[in-house]
Image (tube, rainbow, N blue to C red):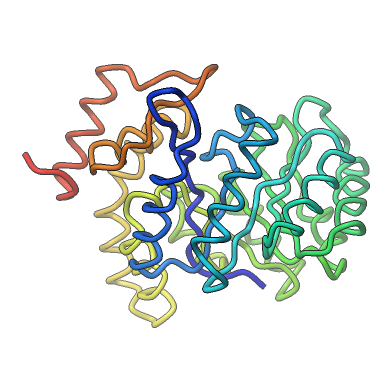
Length: 293
């Protein structure tokens, strides 16, 4: 079972638009020192659709070697092709991944029966545990709690990254699946409400930027310090919204650059932040104390 804070890692690019393993190594080392519980490379924040297979392997190897067994690496392996997802999951396991993040198939628009078939086939073939990734805003399909309940009986399906934004749905997941599934927040600004619904942690883009405070929200909540958790949540909230002011990870990468990490630009078809939105992000980062000014 995966619980706690798992930063969804950005993919750093150098000036030649190549994967920069030195910057990735530095970022992972710094985040480990701040108390995270594991990492998720090659997810949405990692710009996985814009990467080659060779680049994917380089990123996985860099993360696995940097972490060196100290915490789990959950690799994004899901695609809209069931057999490609199976192959990528097996390959990630061969490279040392502890788990795989498998998104609902996008563009195909499968039914609930199709989703059940897809995830069951990937799980049947997987040597490592799976976290299902539900993000209807990117896939045009919503994995319903009744479908997830069926999947939760598979020994290899241990978690769900929920980014539907629907707290009723998340409550129903916990009610139906119980301890068989670890509910992980996929919307950073909803971390505390999701914990209140029975969530166990987060796979977080903002975990690249403010890992310690996101972890502290969890610690405060689970230690019954609800008022302090709410106070920190509300302090974080404007920054978290600014980090998603445009399509992720444009703002997260810009924030990291402002903090001194040479992560480069996002790859097409994404675009760097518009100047007006960069100003909003910089303002919120200054207010939060992340950058001087």
